Length: 121
Length: 110
Figure 1 (tube, chains in turn yellow, orange):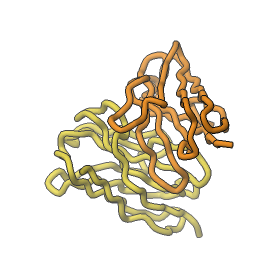
Figure 2 (cartoon, chains in turn cyan, brown):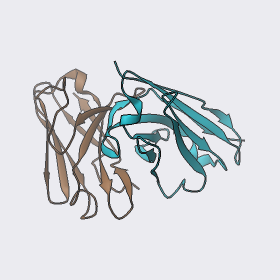
Figure 3 (cartoon, helix red, strand yellow):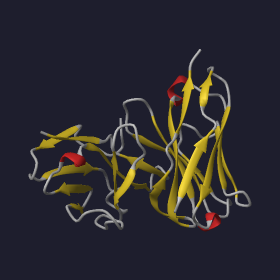
């Protein structure tokens, strides 16, 4: 059974940092690209970043490029998202999601339950 | 403002059919396949339709997707109370080099 379990969210002040993690199980982790998708309170879904199965290719939405860094540790079946210079508009539930292919394919055939990030003073 | 445009709400009585539209442009829907996700408030999204019209295992055939030009649609037939949820469309945008979503449509069963 595929399972994705996020952690690392919390309350942080503007300008602060956080590191989100997503522990994966139930599939061959390095065979699939992974993504982070966020959802601000009462809003729709927003794709944030993605990484290929090997970790060699990354993609970012313009609003987070230079502030967020996606990475993966295939030896530990874990996906990470480093968030720095956080802004109020980064407040959201952050979901990790699995793709169906090593370099993309269909986004989100499986999703984690999410971890909440709140940026506030 | 979302790149893909969906109506904010749709509704129907049990047994009726509901259709949700998703409008985009040549750089997204016009060039790439569309996925649909179902999200019960407070829970994670679930893939409902992939590649415009493919249902993952376990998704009832009451749900169907289609695409024409720069628009896509999700149809729900035989509406049930358990179908009350938010529905999101998404695809890759070749100009933005990013996945883009619609704003979501809340389906209410009256």
